[in-house]
Image (cartoon, helix red, strand yellow):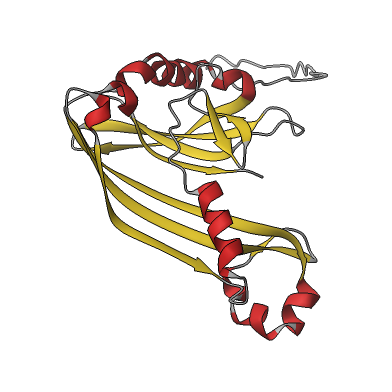
Length: 220
């Protein structure tokens, strides 16, 4: 006769399961970017030519949605507003786009900078030219994210790619793509402290040199 096997249930109840993400791989990749800063920082390079594109947007925060609907000027541009809360939005007050080409010889002092494109737009057309000039002077300085600190409106903000970036920011690998056989990595970064003046956004880096190829940074 066939062999019969009987099993008894033995149920074990697990009180708690704690799962923590492992960010060691993210940190290892980010360390490569930090350790190669001195080799990729354009300020340290000679005999180079490179393009520099920068787009800077200044937002006005906490604008009441009811006020936007009542204003003819604001309502025309409301499609560009960013929702903050159920009742408030963030309005792009000023947008500046610049494209420059940098040519440098053996000496950094020999650098030539040619402005290929320089455009700005303000939603509030009634703003005086003097105010616009002051704002542009404050924000259109070249930002080098390889430096440990960047000056924005005379305030020092730690760079998300600086030597101490992993002390100031939570940095996570969020995406990767292969371009011409070279892996490109995207990292999202957020401030570790809500009280600290820091950036928020993302950056892209290439795995062959660990140089930054793109960075999108917002001052919350």
